[in-house]
Length: 405
Image (tube, rainbow, N blue to C red; front, top):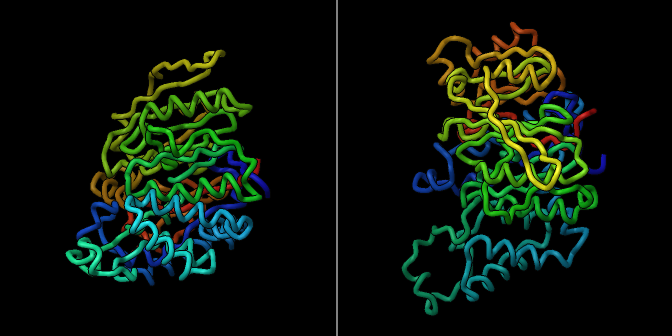
């Protein structure tokens, strides 16, 4: 399968992109949790075991799993001259502005990691001051800094591959991330979608160099012609305006973008934390946002701009209208308000549909999972004690590359 093809949230998933959490989690500390967007420190060994179980669940159900770190390494293997360009870009985007440190870090990475796969993993892990051979009598920074200082911070959120870029039909959005700590994650997507032989012909609907934030957790492919995008804590309306113009001016068959304005909070950080499609006619939803949603229809004005109008009505009726058939909303944890808040926090609404009516979920959300079974869904549970500490579920941890039409 060359290129990408994702025109649905529910049709049979054939190929998916993951990142196996690595030593970047070992560079989380209590003092950096807030900065790095974590609420707690996962135990790496168990997190990897849980992630491997997640990947096996996918492959056992006929899904090809590819890893972001492997694709990036393949780019550097295919084009050896890019290694220097990649390292220089990575160092600058990591905030290393002095030529002195740029040279030291470049030489450290280039000389100590001959394998491109090891190099890519190291750039994700981050770099500690103690790893660098710096002359102490020429740098005041070195003399006054703690030996455990991170010269380049880790990117521990990268196992949530849904966010740095998003497939939209046969194209891709290379996203501008909301948090500075996640901006470097999109470097890998830039190289993969510009150079990798499997993906370099994929049209790009958004650039990581645009000024406005947008993240993949806010983008849902409802059909070949309809995309839903959340206006959220991490996606700005300006970005949706821009991506809509880019899509409508391309050869994409997408005719309508529905913009969902959701509350701006960490609990509802993306649209897919409160709302996901799990079958042709079924959605999970967090009851807490139903009365707070405003929906806008965005269409082309048949020139070079867009036309926007607010859509009145209940969410269920709006979805039924645009999809052309009745839909059912299944509330996270049912009517139990306390359980709903708890299970939504643990991504009870963040389901990954791998075929119509078959979903992968976290095992910890037992009330929601039982409710899904009662509605006739096939529920595949994966372990989540450590992975869930990063505040993301199975959908967050996966970027579909190919779904059957």
